[in-house]
Image (cartoon, rainbow, N blue to C red):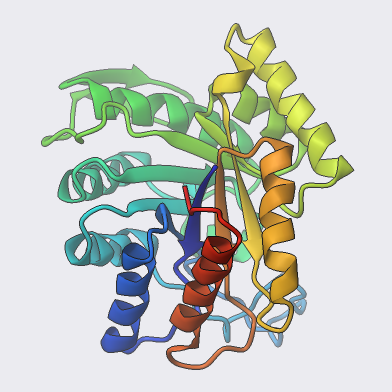
Length: 292
């Protein structure tokens, strides 16, 4: 199981602080840096109110620009979105941005995508919230074609590409595409079409049922279920380090191929994110376990 760390959305905006976190993540041997994605936060005082998981006061760094910066500051650590809300974005533009990031990082990108839940974002970005499931199905097909072929002729329900293509193409052809989410259509879609699945929540019985649904969908699609990766997340409570190793072991027993440790929402100040992931690396080393 490969263990990486979240690029914390609440790491701040000071470049030196960001550089220190990224440098610590790579030098301590973490496998990847994962970036969340949200473009807009809604105000709780908006007409109709707002009770979403976050609002306009919660920070989010834009993943393509942030990971492009990280690519230029690193040599080996992999880069991942987890997850990019794909249906609210223009597909050809995502293909172009991802291809460029993959080139600049020399093939270190994995693109995690999902349908999202924030209808306010969809409205502001001019996309239909109701059709997001059908749209992402078509987007996955088109993205892989644009990343692989010099010219693409595509005529679908949501997209029309009249014999055109992106140039340059990415290093990876196609870029690995992972999917996050837990709704039954998402689990089915991940099993049928994705290179891997990002579950939501801890590795409990509910996650096992979801994983079974992913694997069943893969098998029905004629795929090898064992080739669909599983990428979990483990929040690090700075006051309970005795739980860290147990959390790693639980995800390992679950069958995860990748794990991201997260430090966000732990009310950490400048520099504390990097110190916490360094503590985690030390705890694993003391237990005789490496990050990969």
